[in-house]
Length: 300
Ligand SMILES: Cc1cc2nc3c(=O)[nH]c(=O)nc-3n(C[C@H](O)[C@H](O)[C@H](O)COP(=O)(O)OP(=O)(O)OC[C@H]3O[C@@H](n4cnc5c(N)ncnc54)[C@H](O)[C@@H]3O)c2cc1C
Image (tube, rainbow, N blue to C red):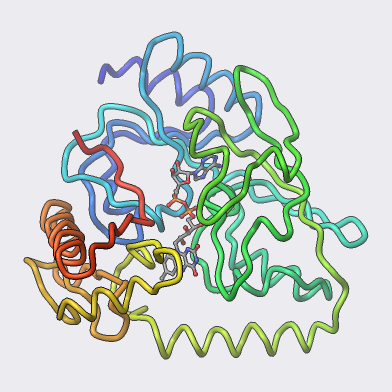
């Protein structure tokens, strides 16, 4: 990609050249991205998107990269990240309003300190608010759908507030998946007053449950597969005998079969081969089509 792109984006915010995606994803996997852009203001974001669209340059939003398997290939486009400059949080009565680059874990902690309940489910989800809303992240039978009132989205060169209904929340899906060029900029969430000590206790119990049940000591992207209707993906993977199965540096966690961890410098190709093997074997044995929860990015 020509240097001019980098120079123009440097004038509209912070830009970096040749950044490995392995440093921007929790799996620690992925080839180099030509440019990474951190807008500092909404105007800078708007100008950058107009410029990229005019020049036909691909771009991709990344939050904390905690739900992404990037290929080993170079990305000849621009990664846009909001986590550096878009994390202001406001409280207004029972509402928490936050910019999209805020860490979900941080938001859960802030809500707890304000004595506001509703985000406890998300206190162990290592992404940004934008990424969480994009895929309606959830746990413990709750998800962003339950607390989001409105989402501020940048689309078609302007800003609009979308209502909860307009976000079309369902299991790990939203309207945003259908419009990868829309950018979630902020959200209003409605919470409920509760004793901070009670909220804190619930969050701590859940933290302990995660530590006990998830291989948090290795790079991962959380659950690799969605749970098929009425079933647990981990049980199907266990059922085909893949607990602990290794392929190159990628390993199906012995602690939690729906986590495939990057145990030893796995390439994206190795990781994907293991994912595909599991899909094939589960289909063969159970006639069930497993669908990935993590998103493949920059694959031909
Ligand atoms: C240890 C671990 C545990 C996890 N536990 C859970 C869990 O309990 N429940 C759960 O649901 N998930 C879980 N995850 C997966 C992941 O953390 C969530 O999906 C999270 O919401 C992803 O947020 P992110 O900011 O990292 O998004 P990314 O992975 O960076 O991006 C995901 C998608 O969102 C899009 N996106 C990101 N920001 C924006 C934006 N501002 N505007 C528009 N699109 C955007 C990206 O383009 C991409 O398509 C876990 C992951 C790990 C590593």
